[in-house]
Amino acid sequence: MNGKVLVVGSLNMDLVVNTAHLPQTGETILGGRFATIPGGKGANQAVAAARMGAPVSMIGCVGADGFGAELLRGAAQDGIDTRAITVETGAPTGIALITVDAEGRNTIVVASGANQLLSPLHLLAAKAAFSAAEVLVIQLEIPPETVGAALALAAEHGTRVVLNPAPARPLGAEILSQVDILIPNEVEALQMTGTATLEAAIETLLAQGVRNLILTLGEQGALLVSGGQRMHLPAYPVRAVDTVAAGDAFVGAFAAGLAGGLELEAAARLGNAAAALSVTRAGAQPSLPRRIEVDAFLQEQGDTPGLPR
Image 1: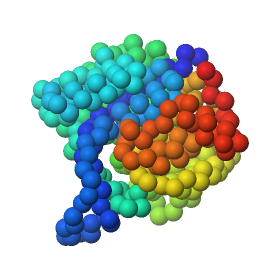
Image 2: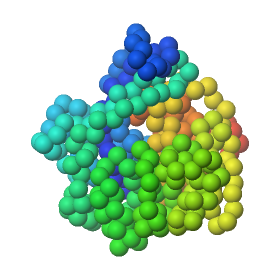
Image 3: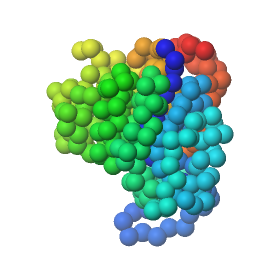
Image 4: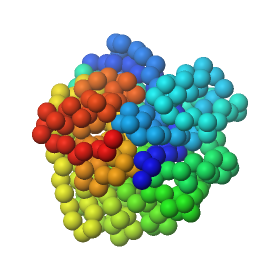
């Protein structure tokens, strides 16, 4: 295995304000600290995988503006191959408006901008990246036709697919059957299936062709459903400061472990550890841990999945 991870997805600049509590409908509140922080689910997951030691390349779009230039510089500093990230003049770089309360809970509103210009033509221009990768990581902050084209190229090149279905929307069996590992959180699983209970969501997704399902459950850890078996992976006990990008930390670390040769359970434990560390820090990409930190944390917990070096 070459251990390479390809991420097709979004790049956003996060505009983050801290508040004592999340505002209710119609309520105006005074916030505290404000920061602009590199984010976007695609970029977050690429950075998370790169910091775990995986060779990572990314396909995406940013605007021809200051935010776009900053996002490209940040990705390159983390060792991500950015040659297939296109600078578009027809739209601004995507942004996310994020409010974080004193308990680390958040609300997020995304204005996609240039992310919506990512097309199947961009993927075809970077087709070699699919053949070079062990694992494709993709989310739903890009156009549906581009998601479909990415899945088709992954199938053509025998690349394993990890899909994080966020923001959630219904996906047909023709899409889900092309996914090797689906990683939603509990809310996303309910929204994409239109069901009322987590058990019903699991059964619906399996019936639609999902082969391996990992449900991220926040402070409850994760549930791995594979080969007719279920395994609950408890969360590691930490004090949460900011839950922004915890799911991205899980997905990126999981993908790095999978590309590096780990089995599903070990890769999921790796994702759990990365997510646990990420919630102890503020911000999206600044919270994403590095390999040495995750290894040390797992040793403290007596849990060593053994990501190959």
